[in-house]
Length: 399
Ligand code: ATP
Image 1 (cartoon, helix red, strand yellow):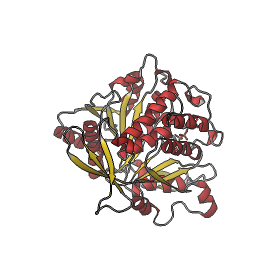
Image 2 (cartoon, rainbow, N blue to C red):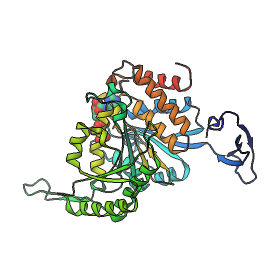
Image 3 (tube, rainbow, N blue to C red):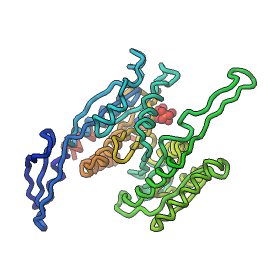
Image 4 (tube, rainbow, N blue to C red):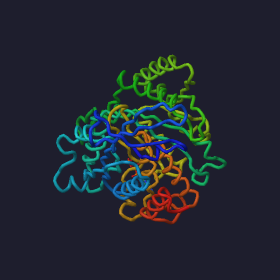
């Protein structure tokens, strides 16, 4: 935790050592200027596992780390080489005990992207990324959709205040479980079955998460959130859709203060382009969440601007930009690092470092306004130069 958080005007702050606090943890005693109540908060360096992965992940994640260092957050980084290079070198995707180690030894994980044309099966991506989501049970994929500047939106007349919603995607079930099989492969009678897994537990916890998120979070301008929209295709996919419908009605009934809405996924795609102002919190399944957040990224300036977190409350969570490894542009210093940098800010907010997160978001906003950005969002900087600009702004070295 940064000491910056402990510097409101007129406050006295001093470091103390507590008998029951391990030596690697610093305890701060904070004396309130208002009522002299004394309370103690315990802080420790947050341990971050950094896994850049493949393609542009290896370019944007170093920029995100550079910005995290510049903001002065109290973090300790450990870097991992999981990805295509490692897989091609020794066939390791995830080392034995890898996921247990991440959950045990780290407070958060910062990930780039996986996918490399040299591994056509994409087996490493599946085992690392889906492995992390499934085996660490990171069931809530939070994807904020926020327009930073009107110039980034392809829709005419749309302002930043008009695009500020969040998609909450179920992250551990659906068609991504790879249940199914192929029968009579390679023959004219071939049959391919891809199962869509929806459990009561999985559906209920993601819908509850969406209502709680709506309750606890405000929009960027500080106004309250108040609506949760469930997106499905229950008119065609009646079995899974029926379960989602029943659970949604039940949980909505327990939260009468929040307006519950519903839209079929096809209608939602049309509405997102026609009028994005109407969305607040959207909850949906794994596949629809994947698809609609690429569409939503288009409203924000493209995939290079979109951030995400893979969360299990109370457990080590993982943060990754929405974009993939983008092989066509990898290694050219042209990838936009802002999605990864905003992802790093999300991670800080999740770890309780809200002021540092806000400083990073402010610097990104400034970069966008001043066009100190990559070509995809209207600038002329390279990946490294754009990252450096944000890092310098965050540390107060540019205005
Ligand atoms: P995945 O399925 O792994 O998420 P994807 O198929 O959605 O990946 P991406 O790798 O995300 O595809 O990228 C698709 C295209 O979007 C890229 O080829 C590139 O043109 C553009 N793109 C993605 N990320 C960025 C970025 N950070 N900066 C600039 N352009 C990007």
